[in-house]
Length: 415
Image (cartoon, rainbow, N blue to C red; front, top):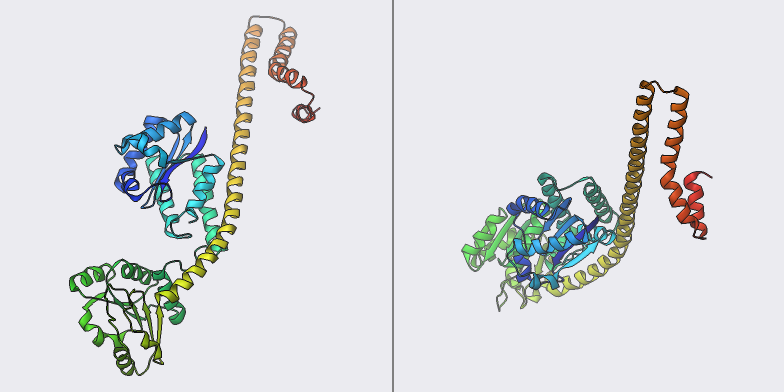
């Protein structure tokens, strides 16, 4: 039996194919039961996210082929179409891959933290479905420990690697706690939605969303318990904002120097932090001439992102060393488990021999045979039966002149 990691991800397949092999959360319990029943594998965990679908299982090479066929059949796909986009790792490589995934080293955004929670969720769903046995229990617990070590002992997730995250991180550096900071978001597209998500994660207390289309502003605001306004209301709301982050598709600036200057007067020159993520710009460059306004553009943030990506790459090297060590420790545990099985099996076999010969001796005594003769015969037969297999193995090994095999014989037999 071997441990396998079978998968498809953002590196091996386009999103159109990844969508077809994704598992909805409500599908997983039945999918796990069907997979283990049809292929007879002993353990199974299915990880399905927007960027990957991976199946971790315990089985043979033949069963691995059956799992591939099952994956294609479950999603009504042509196996020949799916096969070129799959990867299959075995044993130590499979354990290392799982640890890399959980630590964020295999993510689209290096070091992203959400994946660890997704791996834990997949593991918990598999446990609930009854497809996690002791070996996988140990594998996943070791994986979680390694991922935690990577998070706490390296800078893999410490630096912003998207302009949206960089903008929020910069705001946090300036204001510290964002719970009492008032933020005005201009725009309602994907970038602003991502900014709002990061702000919410940082505990930002007051959010206002401004957009040209009021209905879209309301739609986004409702996701984050924010207020919604139109672009026409921005001048009157600007004085209330400590942070302004803008990203629209406008061809002309939305926030001008005069607008910000008037807002600063109303704020009694309390500083304002502005981030312009739009191209072309939403905020006039002349705003930088105002003493209490601090304006950052997408280019300013991009240089921060690039530097942080370099930092994450360095942290990733540290993380890979931790993962290699973690996988090696798990492999060592597996080897020890194999030794325990050998000892158990050998003891059971010896016990069967003893029980069989003892029963025959008792029958002979009950039949009135001489006790001394029966005991002598018992001891001789017991010795011969127990020595037969080891003696045969010694003769075979003894034909080899390799010193290490001779040393092994001496160690096993205490000679």
